[in-house]
Amino acid sequence: MPFFKTVALCVGAAVFYGIVHDQITARLSIEYFTVAHPPIVISDSPTVQGLVWGIVATWWSGVLIGVPLAIVARSGECQPWDEKCLRKPIAVLLIIMAIGALLSGLTGYFLAQSGRVVMDVGYADAIPTSQHVRFVAAAWAHNASYILGFVGGVVLILRIWLARCGTALNEGLKLKEKR
Image (cartoon, rainbow, N blue to C red):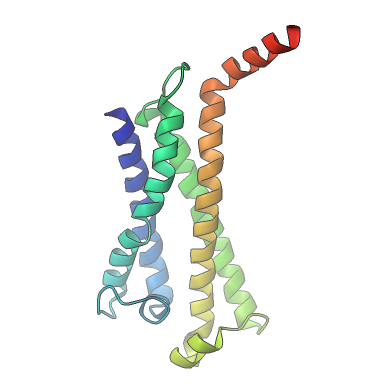
């Protein structure tokens, strides 16, 4: 059961982050959801789009990180970690993702505002010109979240493995060196 609790923690954390993130970016650029993505729900409401996309676009990432994290946290001869031990490292990852999304969104905003970054022609025709800069900011924030979430998830898995088994691993390497 601890395995599934760990996966559920990761899915819950990913969905929570996705909903909060999408509530913000849907208010920044509703077109990011209604033009640049296939329709899941027909609504121009930022709240509805942020809620639906916050779940649909993130639950799977929680599974992708949660399953290997649960395996690394529970398997082997080292002291297993349960989901309570993983709450803080997962929260730190979400904070890093949020900061990265904010910085990336701001960078995209200012680069688009200065004309250094322009929208793809396909989207530019479908989105009012007055919304282009905000769209770029939302897209950059989302890309940063996905990249940081993936890279951070891999780093988290490795750090948990090393934190659990690093001492045993180092001792094993020392034994081989002595032989």
